Amino acid sequence: AQSVTQLDSQVPVFEEAPVELRCNYSSSVSVYLFWYVQYPNQGLQLLLKYLSGSTLVESINGFEAEFNKSQTSFHLRKPSVHISDTAEYFCAVSRLNTGFQKLVFGTGTRLLVSP
Amino acid sequence: DAMVIQNPRYQVTQFGKPVTLSCSQTLNHNVMYWYQQKSSQAPKLLFHYYDKDFNNEADTPDNFQSRRPNTSFCFLDIRSPGLGDAAMYLCATSSMRGANTEAFFGQGTRLTVV
Image (cartoon, rainbow over all chains, first blue to last red; front, side):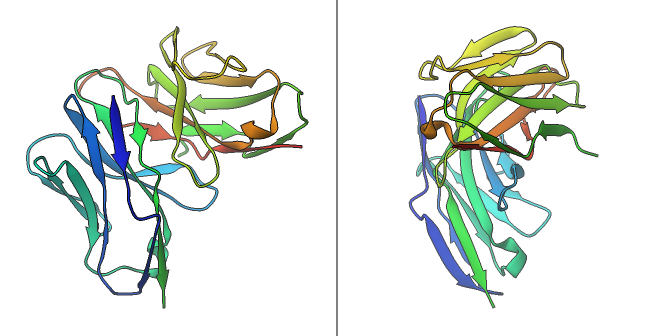
């Protein structure tokens, strides 16, 4: 079985400041790793994913995440946040090579960006 | 270009009155999923369809059923909604073909039980 831990339920930050949202996972098998973003009353949008290869993955809107196998972590970072980044962020895993995307999610981190 | 469409976006139903939520997709994906997301909680997988094969998660209550009449549509039926079933219900799709490793989500349906 897999589990995902997001220790920070809420992270307040000022606009243009850097931010890190933490994610740790536990799994007895190899997994894919994902970050999804959810705006109020909306569905989930994929932010970025780690499948294999380079451990640093980037999104088109300035977020990046680094897979650390020894620490079983996949923390999300952004060097300078915008007001529009205010949202709920979910880290998720799915089992490798099954073909399915049966996602196990963490409890989410609410990012609150203020002026 | 909406790819996974959920209707309605908001649904109010009475306690114990059956309700159906709808999901359609234009991606021609062969796998469709239903997740339940209660307030301030993580989305939780209820079940999925691989083509016409239905796969229930072990802890999904019997009160929840699903139908997939064709590739494009999938329905979530709640036979007797209780107050505890109030949640956002998310539909997602993925493909078993090729190297696609991403799930695509709809906008969700927020269910209120009164």
